[in-house]
Length: 328
Image 1 (cartoon, one colour):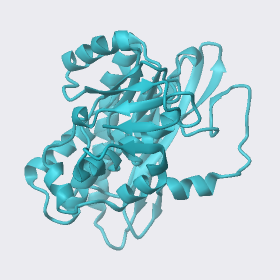
Image 2: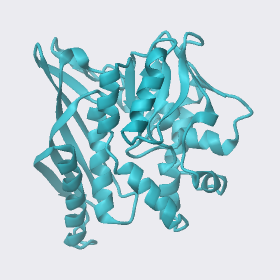
Image 3: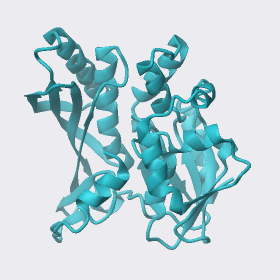
Image 4: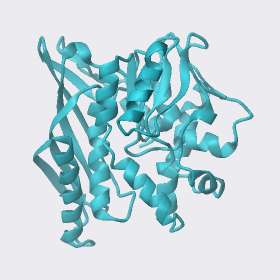
């Protein structure tokens, strides 16, 4: 669902609170966090979606990595998972589902996560993902709304998976572009998460369906800070420029822009294709991290040293204008 429709569906619902609920439905966080003891909390999340690549094994790996990412964004360690499967049994061979599940299992094994069960339903369209449970110390939860003025913003993966996925569906994405986004989307955010915890950061979120600007807006909404993003510094897949200019724009991109455009001021010097990329809905995207300015280069060097090669400083958190994003 688009962010606007989701906000309407959730508005006014009577969500419960509890003394042990550290992170719940009160704002748009990546996962829920519930304290069990003074030094142990659980992190819970769920995510599933339709295929965005043709290969079922790759789709399984991408969906699993995407589901695990929410736990990493909170600074947690994923432990167990449940499969969520929707499958058109009368349209697809069961061997396709087996490959999807095999891809998901391989990615879970890489993450050190144990599959403990799942649920499947017959559905006209294939969908797959995970419900994930992880752990974290209650005092070490990293939320998306703790950014402070002066923080630098680090993005750990390039943008453009939504546009290239749309081109794949249209039969015009090249093998090279497809291979690049598959490699990116199947890469766990575990290393980036571990390094940001080691260095110490103020806030984090992962960039998924609402796009860079949509998730950045969640970080500053109803806070006392804003953001300044240097569009030239934002990493994206080189093939995306031409595809965006050719109109390979996913529907979710328009919904993202419509929902957040009133919070965003984009300088007229930023070309249209780049504006589109900034709103592009991502799958298994990178982490957007708000880190104290004196630690930003330390974290960036550690990320590069541990193989997170595309990580870049893309802007900063500003005292003014509060609750707005300026893109130059």
